[in-house]
Length: 285
Length: 285
Image (cartoon, rainbow over all chains, first blue to last red; front, side):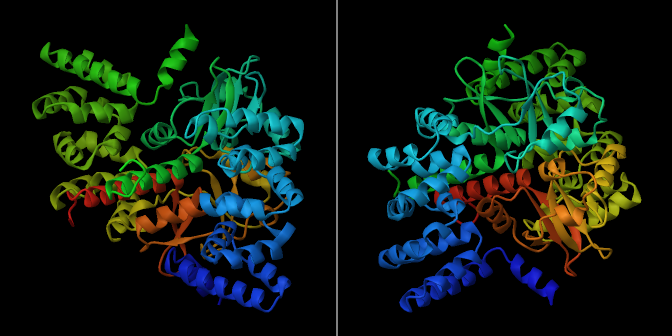
């Protein structure tokens, strides 16, 4: 039985669409019956990306009812998966306290993505829900141009000095309870936060504990700058098979990192725009 | 000085193009002067992806001379970066012994990509250079349909049984000298090689040594099947932010893994084809 289920769940496209259809129907039935618990139960069973798809497929009236039924049960990650038009509508429907809580749970790049197109007043309301440090970080990111590396990057980075040993590094990670998840590389920095090298986790796991990070790190690596365009960053990732790229600010200090999943999303977004333009329906057509 | 160089090297597009132009000129000058050492020196200074770009920009005559000058100094990874038409031409120019050596150094997915479009006779020549086990693995991959997950996946996978501890796993990786590089997840399998769970390396590094893999692994994960289409696989990666997807054969056993960089390359390839089709110059237009 279990094998069949696993294999069934593997079908990348058809099953998705059938599942979405079933989930939309279940949500609508629960809302029609005024059964908020049942609506929440449907949401709880879905991956955040699928929940976002379902929310997009509801009518506006159903969407309002569903978001109200979910309330604090709305998973923050689902908000980050919504497309722009739906996203802004849903954010406006959420209780400020729920929105504030959601934003606190997300990585900085997701928060920026969530609120960048909100109107000034709504944006201010979300920023006020953050503590001072997070607010500073997000405000700074919003100061970079749209579609720039500064917007795409996340601030959460695992850094270490070159004189640490592999053992110290592993112990540090084991003791830390707020590592970004997932991450793929440790960035070795000097005291001025300039990147000196990178260590893929697979290499760290293959190294002996007494070795210094300096002896293990990769010193040839590619970086991007906060003002670089997302499209160029995506092509850089694809060409050189990068997984993580440190992002430097105007003074050459480490400002954040871009990871390959963000670069892949940017690549997909850019090509979609190019295709719309070719088909004659894009902004610039 | 060093900072300026770092920043200069960051420019994703302009510097690349200027560098390529300079490299092409240096190669042509070296070949004209009959100086094979100088030609090899240019190649040695370039990233494999850039060397592939330079080879593509040469005329056919220059390309023949350059490949001969490089000889065994041709980096195997550069071969895997070449576009289809140039790739087949270059492979045919290489000495069989050099080609055999190159193929032995590459991961299985790169070997498949390299030789899949070669004519039967050339393909046979390369396969004969491999040892029996590698030959079996590559032949099997070539048996899957074009543009399928079976072609895209690599066979090199780090697997472990669920009863191993985190400490045992780390010690195993430290002692192993042929780990795939890079890799991002350990796949926990049962004795019949059916995947039970996945452990991102960042999670393994955050876990205490006495814990069992079963206690650390993620049991909800998405798999693909060997016959799934690359395009669907790429969209699955993008939608669910996957980094590694186990690939199952017809009986549900682990046949290999697809990693996000391969999925990103497939996405890029697919959208490029879609765009050509939209522009009316594609195969099916």
